[in-house]
Amino acid sequence: MVQQLEYLNNSLSTNPTSNVHRQAALQLEIEVDRWYSAFCSLVKSQRDYVYSLTGWLRLSLFQSYHDPYNKAHQNSDIYSLCEEWQLAIDRIPDKVASEGIKTLLTVIHAVVVQQAEEQKQKKRSESAFKELEKKAEELRSLESKYGPYSGAEGYGDMSRKSPVSDKRAKVEALRCRADEEKSKYEKSIGVTRAMTLNNLQTGFPNVFQAMTGFASVCMEAFESVYNFKSSDRILDSKRLLT
Image 1: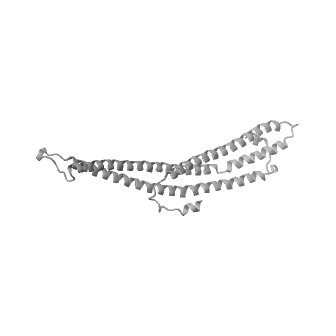
Image 2: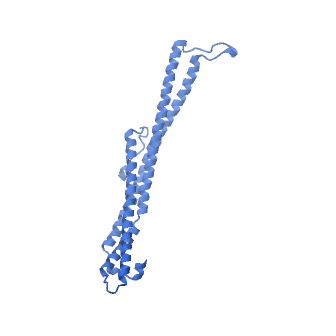
Image 3: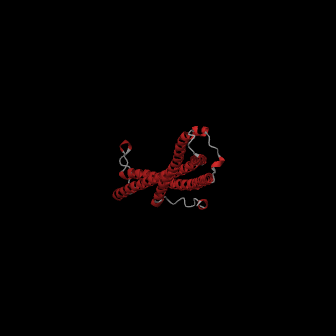
């Protein structure tokens, strides 16, 4: 996927964002947000579980450690294993991974916001051209009634613009406004596409790299737990008090 993103370009920047594009971006934002929440919840629940289990064993073994008639060797092996498990959980780079997902979520949200702004600009442009067409139709109606070259009426201070010239001035002003809104819309299309490509081309590789590193460290950490031997660590009362 990362390699495919590298080959994308901005050659189709004049194509406006479609409803399909907007829905896809919104759905992607929702799914990445769920991913972020689920990932943080998973790591927290695992860490809380291991800490609670280790703490419970610590309290239990502290009592049995001072009982000369209680052989707690098997329980101490379990406690040592839980300690190793806790150390393994503490070593995993979950903050780096979660920040990678959160950063991806941020850049996707920026795309969603820009797409919405493009849609707003599209509506402003369409509204301006509708208003222009309406006034242009009124101008054509006046020109058919008074003639296209109807000039000012009266002389000197008593003169006033004819309905045709007045309407023509308003139409020209609306035409300039409509062209300006159209230019803004076309610019917005380019901004949306450039932002989409840039954010995806940088966001996805970064989060994949973070998750790959996270998975690699997790595998090493949990392998150390799997291969752990209780004889490698001696249980003493000081460890039970920490």
